[in-house]
Figure 1 (cartoon, helix red, strand yellow):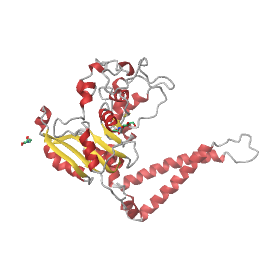
Figure 2 (cartoon, rainbow, N blue to C red):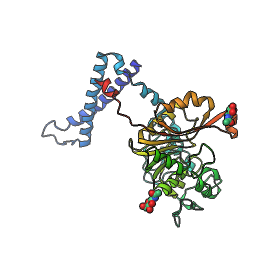
Figure 3 (tube, helix red, strand yellow):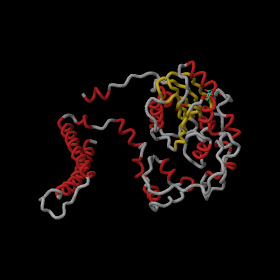
Figure 4 (cartoon, rainbow, N blue to C red):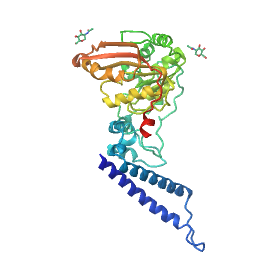
Length: 385
Ligand SMILES: *[C@@H]1O[C@H](CO)[C@@H](O)[C@H](O)[C@H]1NC(C)=O
Ligand SMILES: *[C@@H]1O[C@H](CO)[C@@H](O)[C@H](O)[C@H]1NC(C)=O
């Protein structure tokens, strides 16, 4: 570990030194003699870069000398950094998928981007943790025509098909033929979150009542993680005038487009991404069907901590129909959730009785948890002094 770090530092220094030499060369051509016939002006941004490189080198030199003089442990990377470097929540994992990356970046600048049917390239990269995607200079293809009108009713019987660039290869190229269970049937969606069909459901009237009695009201701002076509956002807007963002991917169906057509904001983001929301500002975070045992442990843990980050004190975390093997609930997930130190307002576990659930001995958990007040940790201050 120590050797690897040292080697990295050396490589970095070598690279920086090469840059600095070329920049020194540039800057030295500037003021040789006043009689010079071709005074090459060094652009400001290069001088600025030179300054940055100098500052970096002096910072690294200080780092290196302090780590070689004190114990090796002082320079060891924090274990938390190693834990999450493996699941690479952001763009660092783009390079793990060179084929997709190559396809994504293979385009003609200043023209229309290539068609990416069903997100075969962009969505595939995002799903693998390549997010944010690399910058491109092309224009997203649009649907062939502007829809005659956009619905003002989020439960409108038919969302306008013309607003979507349907994949050429798809058998179904209309909202009307998508499987109703996926969130595209307005009649089904209109009833969701309104009544309890099992002990695992938390109807919104009950949620709002619980929020009031827990001192968590009003629910004004929320985030629905993996929220499909945005039905929770739609319902909470109707019932409480709340603004709820919905993270959603277009896996197999135009979820984002549907949410947008219903007038709620789709955040096109994978589950392993840090939410683009400031700390401590949301009243409610819900995790739905997408958040389940199939998410790797460290990624799920990160997601929970990120939900905690964006929640205000007193805010609510609603874990809705999380499922896992019965044994794993107590062994893995209850301790993981318990680490947050949240107050349990609702905590319901029940057998998952569909075919898959019975086969794998799975259970569902629905929990409504409240974030406590917490003073800032002094860990950083203590270790750096
Ligand atoms: C939502 O806002 C509208 C318009 O300001 C208001 O008339 C209505 O009472 C509000 N509804 C709730 C549930 O707060
Ligand atoms: C849940 O499933 C377990 C194991 O299959 C079984 O022993 C238990 O009785 C079930 N509980 C209920 C409430 O059905």
